[in-house]
Amino acid sequence: KPLVRLLYATEPSIRWNAFKVCRFVARRYPQAFAPYMKEFFVYGTDDDLVRNIKIDILTSLAGCGSFASSERRFLQDGLLLLHEFRSYLDANPPSFAASAARAIGQLALRHPKDTVFTQCMNILIRNVSSSENEAMVAESMFVLRQLLQRSPDKYDKVLYRLASLFCANRVNSAAARAEICWIIGEFPFLSYRIGPEALRVLLLKFSEESVVVKLQAINLGAKLWCRLHENGDRSEAQSSMGLLSMLGSDLVPLSEAPAQQ
Image (cartoon, rainbow, N blue to C red; front, side, top):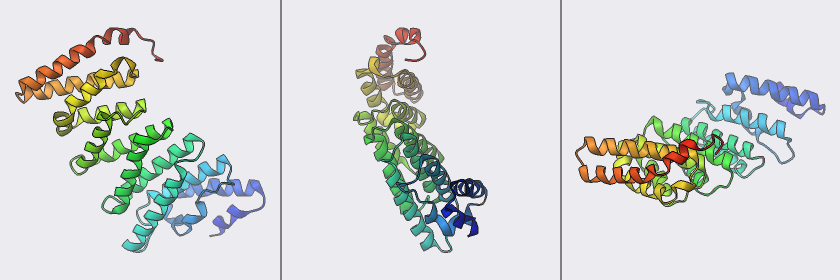
């Protein structure tokens, strides 16, 4: 409590040092600040340095497994944090909004079985499909990938939803498109059902895609062909190979392109 009081000191240097100490302690003992969670909510009057420290502390609290004395309070605190993080997603600078997306991922990890997790996933997916903040979209997709890799069979509906957004051309961020392309190729149940359609979508504007998306498209095509061929589905395998051959017309200029493209 005395350390938290120092956050309101009139001397700027005292306040700044108090925030830094709080961040240091929160990373190692987040339970210590659990009762004072609201003290670290970000306000419009906070400068960038203070806001960054506050989001770091709140992220540590979001990943804390015991900041409530009962299951009901645990859920309430999780929803409160989620509401707070969500309000930061439209904030500037973009890096701060990306930090908020990362914090939502930490919160989802602590609530794998309740409504907080579902709301976290919905918010992250909405970011991927509608936000123009490239940094936040990339961070949201990275967080989603980490969450889904833990239990892909359990969250198959979320995976299908991401793949469907991709096939409907509702994902514009190059980083997010590359991540989703990797996801489709990584999980066999997605490859069989959505892989061919994803390849066709990529083929339509392959020359306009970024290098990272092109490489993942080739990776997806190779995985899809191998899996279909191994399972004896010759017709689909031949179709995928045809798509790969069409993609191949862009491989030579891609290999000769400068690294920064």
